[in-house]
Amino acid sequence: MKLLTITFLFAVVLLSCKGGKNGDAEKLSDSLTEDSVKVNTGGFDSTEDSVLSESASMESGNWVNSNSLLDNYSLNNLKSKKTLKQIQWFDIPEIFKQSPLDTNTVSIYSDAALFLLKNEMYNEARIILLEITKKYPDKEEEWLALGDAQWGDGDEEAARESYTIYLNLMKKHNKDLVRIPKRVYERVD
Image 1 (cartoon, rainbow, N blue to C red):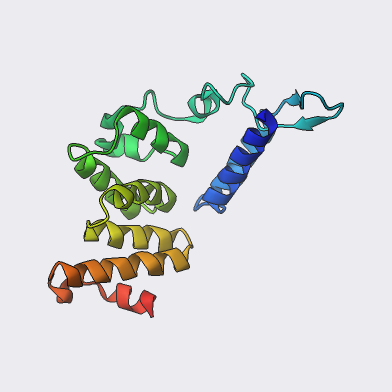
Image 2: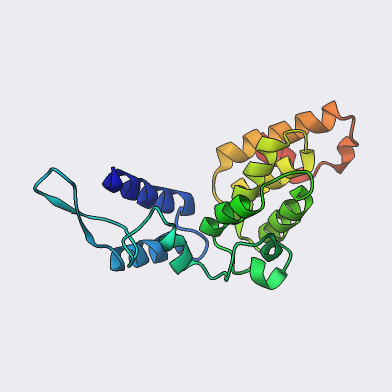
């Protein structure tokens, strides 16, 4: 079970980064390989390389804590431009755990996602925007931003779906269709 969890995490790391703008997947892969230990599969005679951190404990979240650049997972991290530039994709779920998305925090999360998007931190912006659009599916501007983040992250198919939802919401809410950015039409077609 432990090995399955570890292997799954490694796959998520590599797939979610897709190489990343700054080679994040390669950096994380190297970091995880350097920190790996042998784990007895329990009941089997063989051992497998795992992607556990130095403490060899995934359940306690030590891998995230030891690789994070943040001192804590306070919502205040999303209010500071300096701290936002240090946020990594794996920090975001920890922040959501400490400060759940609700009507009081949605604007903070949304502003943070837009800042990340403008700074070409597409994967981090995408993670936040996916949570916002899941909980608040009628927020058209977040669908537009999600499409931009997905496009920037190289997931053009998902971006087209987000742009289509954005277009449909703009029509449904009787918004001024002239405000729709030209790139949306170009990317949907």
